[in-house]
Image (cartoon, rainbow, N blue to C red; front, side, top):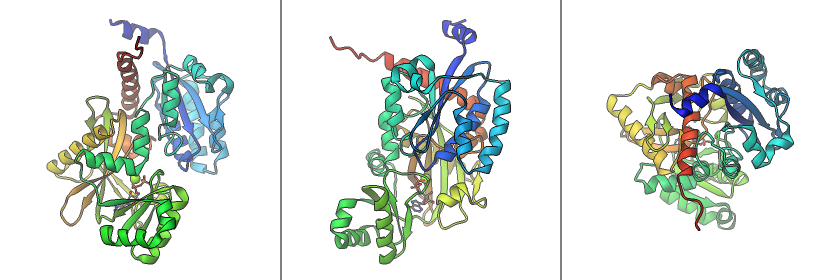
Length: 381
Ligand SMILES: Nc1ncnc2c1ncn2[C@@H]1O[C@H](COP(=O)(O)OP(=O)(O)O)[C@@H](O)[C@H]1O
Ligand SMILES: [Mg+2]
């Protein structure tokens, strides 16, 4: 038996789950945390729950997940929480620590062995939490600081995709300052280079917040004004008519791609309502594709993952242009929705990796990356 295995058998790994957060995707994050907590193998892991409120306050001690769920208006989350609670009491022990003990980076280090950040969107998926975990010298699941930040910033992301030779829709980056000081030229550039219809997006958000589709001058003006409320950097992109496909990637230096899935929103596009409220939105896993199409999506997914130097996991989203069948990379999500029915785990399930195996693998990848980093010289005398 290897020393590592022996250690694993005698001592459970303490997994810090960080969830909630100051983000539009707060409730999705709570649902992801509920699912992971329920699926954590109690023989191997203890869970340490770390919640962050909508205002950014850290909650530990007691049961922060329950506290945050109670603060939401979501009957669904509330109903699920009871089930999670019951399952958790029987299985993994929840270790309790007080907030003051845990928020200082070094104290965090003494409380958990590995962290699974489950916060989607800004202040969580964007490298901020990852930076804290680097300072604490803790292994954590998913992308490092730089890849997280790039994955959150659609302008940086597209630039790296282009740099890696990946096919993307034509786009322009518009700074809020430029739009506010020279609206005529801004619109003129968009009308000549991108044309209508186009998508206007704040560079650093998720869940389709602040995104609009513009078909004419009026709508474009409104769309830019809206996006400028959310960010100082705006992405304007040619609208693609076609299918929306997704692919899950898992690994560090040798990442693997799952079978792709397809999202069919019943609304004009996959907006906030379609993602979280519209039950007509269809998620098809695996997507109906030829072998060749599947392979090409998987290849692009891995290349997109590597283009931003991602690690652990990511979901890469695509468009298939109806005109010519060409596949374009839309975006990469470094902390994709992670409930047991979210696309990321569902695509792995369809590819033969169960939800709990996926969690095991992600924790293992986090530990491997941390160990690999230790090989790098960090003292220069
Ligand atoms: N260029 C585009 N062409 C067609 N649809 C688009 C385009 N860009 C975005 N969309 C639609 O808007 C949704 C959200 O845009 P996306 O770039 O994925 O942002 P988010 O990070 O908020 O998910 C997409 O899932 C898709 O339905
Ligand atoms: Mg998206």
